[in-house]
Length: 55
Image 1 (cartoon, rainbow, N blue to C red):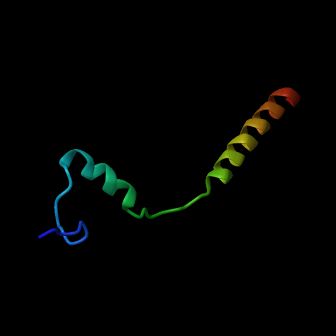
Image 2: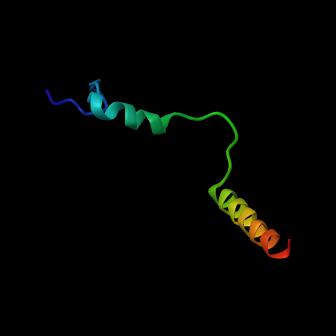
């Protein structure tokens, strides 16, 4: 009489189903590592500071 969770097909509660599925979807487009984004931002900031000092 006991059924394992894998065999049951129950719907998830409406309040959390959308949030859980959002992170499971694969996104399309350019994928950039977070380290590159931080390095690029730091480089832009440094360039801005250097331009302000020398010009």
